[in-house]
Structure formats: C-alpha cells, structure tokens
Image 1 (cartoon, one colour):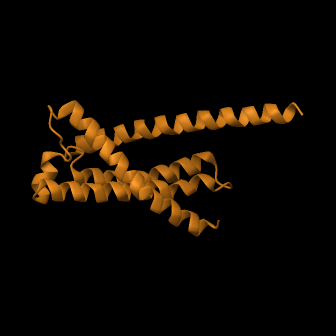
Image 2 (cartoon, rainbow, N blue to C red; image 1 turned 135 degrees about the vertical axis):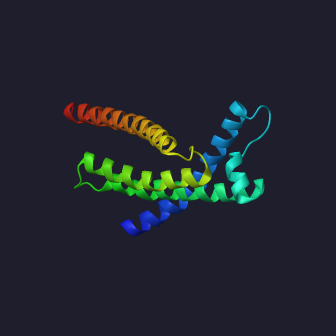
Image 3 (tube, rainbow, N blue to C red; image 1 turned 180 degrees about the horizontal axis):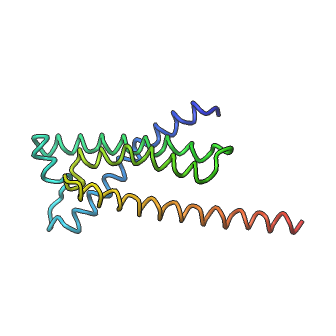
Length: 152
C-alpha cells in the first residue's frame, strides 16, 4: 500500500477510535467526579456552546479530529531513514499542535498560562509513558528475533 493510501486509511480508522477514547474518558471522569451524574463535557464548554447536547456533539467531533491526527501521524514511525529522535520529535510536535488547541477549546484545561503549562506537562507525561512502553516492547521483540536468528 502506498503512503497516501496508508495515511488516508489510518486517518479514517482514527476517527471512530478517537471518539471511542473520548467516550471512555467522559464515562471514567463522570464515575470519578460526577457524583452519580453523567457529565459528558465540562460546564464551561456547555455554557460556551449553549447546550449540553451541542457541546457533547462538538466534543465528539473534536475527539474524532484528535483520533484522525494521531492515527495519520503514526506513519511517521515508518520513515526508516529518520532517526528515532526525529520521528519522536515530529510525532510529538504534530500531535501536541492539535491536542493543545482542542483541549483549550473544549475546556479540558484551565484557561490560563499555568493551566496550559500543567495540561502540556500532563500530555508530555502520557506521551512519554506511551513512547517508553512501545519502545520497550519493540526492543524486546527485536532481541527475541535476534536470538532466534543467531540460534539457526
């Protein structure tokens, strides 16, 4: 499959995945902080949009965008002539450049410099944990393949 097809397919598959992850997050946060109520969006966002149903629909669309961008950007990991540092930096820049404005629009972060910094640091922590997990798994798989090959 050529790169353009791969980008389009991943982007399309990322849309429902982003929406599903968004739903899991709202359900989980409602269970933790909702005091028995389902809270699909932060109150600020509902007030800004005008109704809870419109806010939930817009938030679902924003989660779809995030899912599409994360999935589309994953082709960066297949650019073999780039170093792992360059792949990581570009993937991080692309995903953060979408995640931060969406988080601001949806009210997921406090609307202040400190709120943006805190949200960015949380994003960095989650990104780093996911990257380290994937790196560790791939490193294990490569070592296992090398042991298999050297045993022949």
